[in-house]
Length: 239
Image (cartoon, rainbow, N blue to C red; front, top):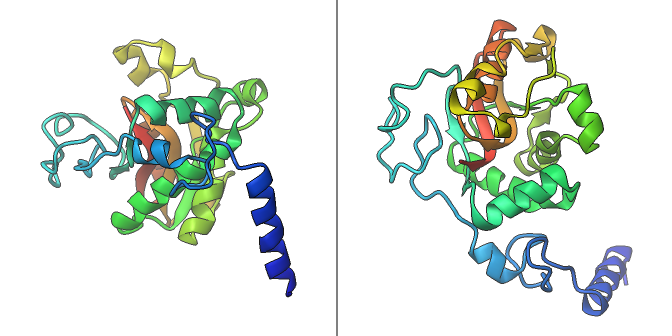
């Protein structure tokens, strides 16, 4: 047999002896439609079916060019939001395991679902840029979950990825512990973009979850000041 067939047979044997386990429920995951998830968990993911193109919320298909009833009066520097999942149930479990428990394989099913959503949206960008962590936050977590997602998205969409295009100029408080008003003020002025890396580009800004959109909007402002033509947020989940 050719090496590729030997390799395939070897992997099949390993899967039979030690079946891959679901990242959510720990059941055997060889039959799932998404890598890392069993069939039951893959089918139970909380998909957004009628997203608003402006904010990414489930608007039942009623989010036109000016936004949906929730976002049309909200100020943002983003040119759109694409997110395949609601931030609840199994999707929330996956994001939290990726973000806080260093289960980086969780980026694979999330990233593949993001890739599908971005294809459906016409791949509205030509450069993948992860929302950066501060040095302190990176030391605490040991990885950047947004960059983990870009590592899946780049080959899936055949797009360039640049983790150095955007950086944090200062440490900010964790958004999840703040009220709505402070969430919007907290990230202002916290980001810098490298002009040679983003000038003239249509950026797909990548993050795990979008809630108020304040962090992403602040990133978009920095990217556009550095010459980015447009910035669309690609997130795994919309809260």
